Length: 102
Image (tube, rainbow, N blue to C red):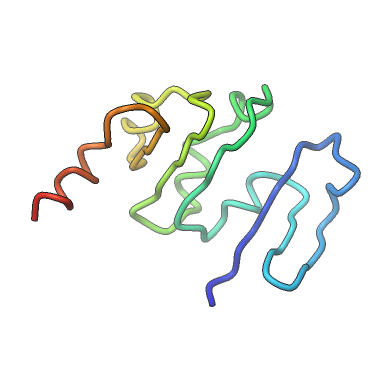
């Protein structure tokens, strides 16, 4: 099983590095995304808007996916960086539709 990482807001009392049975909890978003295939945004906290997504992309396995469950992020800017973006209730990313048509 590939490692899974999670990161909560820095104000969370759980914001220290911890290992659970199936999830490693990191103390920051950058550590959490390093080596990951995807990142998933499930809350609409402002912290997620101000992350350095270019830095995150450089540390991820490619293709790098973003699942934006809150439609919080700038999807076109993320795509310009190279991410494959899936946003709930929005049209599928070109990368995904091309895979479906093969």
